[in-house]
Amino acid sequence: MKKRLLSGVKPTGDIHIGNYFGAMKQFVDLQNSYESFIFIADYHALNQIKNPKKLSQNILEIAKAYISIGLDSQKAVLFKQSDVPVVTEMCWIFNSLTPLGLLRRAHAYKDAQAKKIPINMGLFDYPVLMAADILMYNTDVVPIGEDQKQHLEITQDIARLFNNYYGETFKIPLALINSEVAVIKGLDGRKMSKSYGNTIGLFDSREEIAKKVMSVVTDSRATDEPKDPETCNIFAFHKLFSKTQIEHLKTRYQEGTISYKESKEILIENLNNFLDPIRLKKKELDDNPKVIFDVLAKGAEAASKEACIKIAQVKQKIGVNISLCR
Ligand code: TYM
Image (cartoon, rainbow, N blue to C red):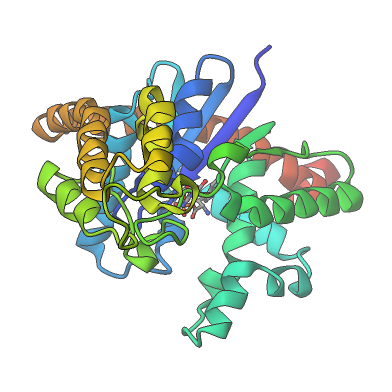
């Protein structure tokens, strides 16, 4: 029997190539070898997005992204977190056994505290909802980028806590982090993140790509001066998008036979070659959004079926199912 894989992306807008290489590419690569549950973490986005229209658009964008990069709804269950409401019920059950200290150590909470960003309960409780997402479906593996590693450790802790209180109920899921792409850097060399405004969007137009790449800051070395590929932000992108040319580009950098301008132009061309098929598929979905609604409806049904079995088991274990006392 195939092992089960689960992962998700939060619809906060501007889905980027960090999301793609860090996590989503693995969803596609592994959809034949695992029984896959891939979802849109819309309740997780509520912390950040308070504009309902924007949230709906973002949800659709992620759904389109999943299909445009090659996820096949015949192979993977694609669904929306909010379509499986028992997940929030599970979250409450987990809340009742999660120590405060565990959540106080969470990076996202500590970052928000350090930056003096107003903190709501959703942000604080974020890792517990994530644990409910993962544990609900008897998940074996969770493909994620490095920034979600701590969340997965909290999930493991919660699963162990529950199993200790109530007996073996949850599998301990493992993170699948591909070390080569665990942290994709952005245009400014920091981690690619919407909050830094340094992203290359999965759906960026040719014009946006050209503008963004051309604006990447490099040092002032002239064409005929040797350059260090390992400290160049453009070269870091070549490693992702110019694989077949990488050795040649490296030599040209080291020998001083390429300008940063030419390097950027090569990158723009390769990035567009990579993005073109994704853009094409996305355009088809823009023209026929019914496909998305059908896929998500089917996914909601399949995911809910699984979730209802698990929550029934859990309710039995914790003692709220009194039919046993009859
Ligand atoms: P989110 O939406 O922030 O990111 C989605 C995935 O993209 C990865 N990622 C990156 N990987 C490498 N380099 C980067 N610069 C980069 N930026 C983002 C993230 O690590 C993530 O894997 N909490 C999750 C959503 C979620 C979830 C879950 C994931 C909710 N429940 C259950 C897995 C399982 C999040 O906000 O991801």
